[in-house]
Every structure is written in structure tokens, then in C-alpha cells.
Image (cartoon, rainbow, N blue to C red; front, side, top):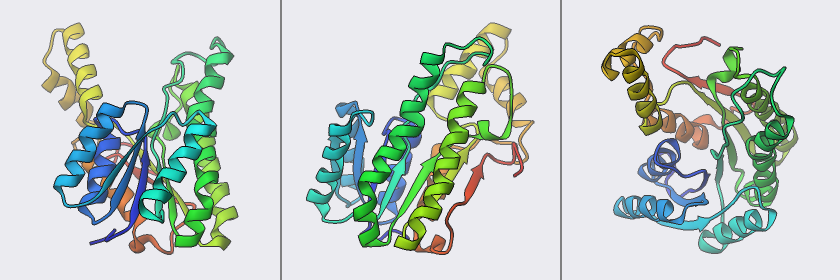
Length: 258
């Protein structure tokens, strides 16, 4: 197993990608520390992991709060005595607006969660990761690869997150810590399914037709599912990627080439 007896901390546990990262890590042999603000969601995912024969620790956490972030580190260390990988998956959607008109306070709020919170967590976990010669995986977005109108605030935040990951790779590499990035495109999960149903109703067509039209723009003619993106995270967390740091892996079915 790629992550046999490793300890993986995942922020932003939700019903889509966050859950998939946690569960796929457990399937690969890891014990998992689950962090998000919604405890009931964490408990559900923890039950899944327990059924796979691995251990899961639930730590309700607001990653924008310094004390809560410190508690997450202490809880992980207290439960398992080590941490091998931190997955910074939590994010907030910044305002969808043109940069010429966007409210700067909303942009700052997006940066707080999407960039500074990831830096906060990573810094706090550095001692544990240095001890285990571990890794950090930043979850980014395919917004890096386009400049469509109204996505400017989101791209600013995600481009900053990529720069953060690359700089951390240089800073932390001498301590044996790898830092890499996953940039998903479409993720075929509940949020996107809801959106496709909405688009279908607006246009008077079926959600299946919306899917087919979208998939037509992707080389593999299918939208990646959460588990497929999570498997790329498992790869970066594993010894298979032991010589890789500062990299950004696009997982988008060929929607963009980079």
C-alpha cells in the first residue's frame, strides 16, 4: 500500500473532494486526521475510514483561527505521534466579479482562507513534517490556466497559492519536506451536478446534455470524479513521488494542457 501506516491530515473535509482525499488515503493504508468546521460531516467520513480498518481523528477546525489551527496540530500529534502529509484542501470562493469592480474587502477575505490559512497550517506542521521527512499537498484549481472574466479574484488567490507552494518547496526542501500542488478542473460531485441541473432548467435541456457538451471540450470526454483527483494526492503523498517537489499536477482530463 502506498501510504501504509502513514498519517495524513486533510483540511476542508466536505462531501466531495475532501472526503475523497481522506477515504482514498485510508484505502492506501493511512490513518487520517479530519478537519473542517462541520463536525457532523467529519464524523460521517470518520465512520467510513473506520470501516476500512484505519483510524480517523475528528478535529472541528476553523483554519482562519490561529488557536484552532494550533489545536489541530496538537490533536494530530496527540493521537498518532507523527504527521506524514498535510493536505491543504480548505478553500473559500472569492467574489465572482470583474477586477475593475470587485469589493476589495471580499478579495482580502478570499486570500485569508485560500492563501494565508494554508500558510498558517503549513508553518505549524513544519516541525512534525521535518521529523517524518513528510510532504504538503496544496489543492489548487484549473483557474490557473485561464483568464475568463469574473474569475479574476479567484485566479489571484489560486495563483498566490501556487507561488506559496513553490516558495515553500525551496524553503523546506533542505529539511526533507516536499511541497506539491494538484490543480483539478471540473469535479463531478454534488456541487457541479446541482449546477448542471440548474443550467439544464435554464436552457430547457437535460443535465445529461449539459454534461455531454462540457465533456466535448475535454480530451478524455469525461469529467474527473473526486476519487480520481484524490488518487493524485495519494501519489504526491507517497514514496513514489519522493523526488518530486515544487510541482503542479493538472488533473482535468485534458481540458487544459500545461
